[in-house]
Image 1 (spheres, rainbow, N blue to C red):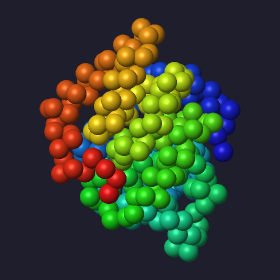
Image 2 (image 1 turned 90 degrees about the vertical axis):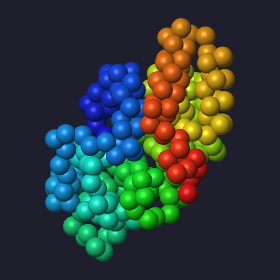
Image 3 (image 1 turned 90 degrees about the horizontal axis):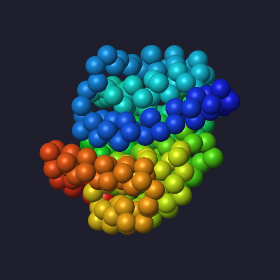
Image 4 (image 1 turned 45 degrees about the horizontal axis):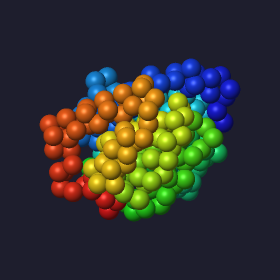
Amino acid sequence: MISNQRRSRIRLAGVRGFYTAATFVFLAVCGVAFGGTSVTIESLTADLESKDIDRIDKSLNDVKRLSNKGQILPFIADLWDQRKEKHPGLPWDVINTNIVRVEIADILLQAHQNARIKLDPQPIHRFVVGQIDSDDPDIARKAIGALALVDDSADVGKLKEIATRKDPATFRLAVATLTQMCNENAKSAVAELDNSIIEPELKSYIQKRRHDSDEFKKRTAWCDRSGSNSKLQ
């Protein structure tokens, strides 16, 4: 479903997106509103019906930025659960592509962590973990970023392995995700990466992410939010 042109844009975007992804996750999960964002069930339905992956991707990212998702979350949950009987007119072939489902999963994990919706996060988590090695770098990056919301120590080994590969498509986001996590395994993994990676640019990125994340966590009590980021619930 992803055009060669879109893949090229993703690759040409390169490292630039990695520096902002971690900050976005922090702000979104903390419930910080982003100005100018407006998504309704009707507008999202129209975007889905367009079958335009770029348009759908933008719309779902706008959902993440909503300060109040209460009206739209049940609809997003229906998309995840593939409630075709409730929404027979939707393009389910597009909705069920991995690129769209990983975005839906990200929204629901964020909502679960913020106690905005009741659901079983385990199937969503398993799906996301299964996408971090996707051949599509955009899907892999989205999945890696979503794991910061889960903060499951069981994911740390895989994220560290991805960072160790030093692949430009995933290295920075894997490191950013590890530094966002609050569990001790993640903290140790980041320290080990800092000690083992010698390339100056990569090492500098690890150290900057460690510093920035530590400062953020102290300033916001990120890891003390009623234990919600300590494990998958």
